[in-house]
Amino acid sequence: MSLLVTGSIGIDTVETPHGRAADVPGGSAVYFSFAASLLTPVRLVGVVGEDFPDSFRRVFDGRPIDLAGLETRRGSRTFRWHGRYEGDMNAAQSLRTDLNVLGERGPTIPPAFRDSRYVFLANTHPALQRDLLAQLTSPKLVVCDTMNLWIETALDELKQTLAAVGGVVLNDGEARLLTGCNNLIDAGRAVLELGPRFVIIKKGEHGSLLVDGPDLFVLPAYPTREVRDPTGAGDSFAGGFMGWLAAHDRTDGAALRSAVARGTVTASFTIEGFSLEGLATATPAGVEARLEHLRRCTRFE
Image (cartoon, rainbow, N blue to C red; front, side, top):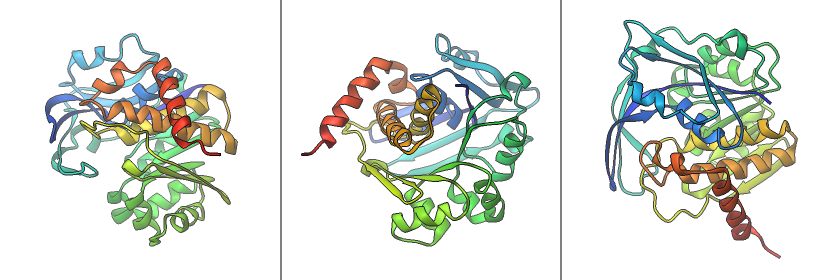
C-alpha cells in the first residue's frame, strides 16, 4: 500500500568522537525514506531552497522513492543543522540550526499523493502536521513524531494533533515531559489517553517500548558494536516500522510488533556511518539477516 512521508530535508554538519561530516544530506524525511524504501516504495513530500545541491538529489537514484512532492522554493535556502555528539552519544548538542525554508509555509501534497493510505508526519510544528493531514483523502494509518520544543511551546496544538492520528513515536524524555510520568509504561498509557491507538517510546541504546491499548511489547536495540553517528536513527526506525506496515497492509497488534522489529534493524544500519553512509549500503537481504540475528538474541525457552 502507498506510504507517504512529509518532513525536513536538510544539509547537516555532524561531529562525533569518530570524526566530522560537513554539508551532508540530512533531515527526517530523508532518513525515513531511505529506511522505508528497503521494504516498500515511498512518496516523499518536502521543501528545499535554491541552494539544495543536485548531488543530494542523486542520492535517491535507483531507490523506490517518488520525489514528485519535493518542492524547490525560489528565493529560499535549505534547512541546515550543525550538531555534536560526545561521550555515549545518546543526545546531540545543537551548535547551529538555520530553519530557512522550514520557517516558511509548509509543502503542498501533490494530488497524485493524496490517496496515500499510510502516512508518517515527521517532526515539525503540530499545526503544520494537521494542515498536511487535511490534504489527504482517506489514510488508513497516520503516525506522527514530535519533540521537546513543541511539548513546551505548543502543547495545545500538539494535543489536537495527537487526537487526530493513530500512532505517535517519541523518545523517553519526550514521553516523560509530555505526561509528567517517570515510569514509561505509565507515560505510554497517558499518551494513549490523548487519542492515539498506540505509542512507541524509543529508549536509544536500550531499545523501544510499544504500548498498544492494554498490550505492551519491549524490544532491545540491535547489538551494534560501533556507533559512528546516531543522527537520523529515530527517523530510520520510523521508516522501517511504517515500511513494513505499508508493505503488508496490516495494523493489528502482531503487525505492530513485527514492524517495531524492522524499525529496530533498519536503524542499526544508520548509526554505523555518517549521514546516509550506513543506510546506503543496506539491502533487503541485509535487513532480513539482522532480523534473524535479533530473533536469536531475544529468543528464550
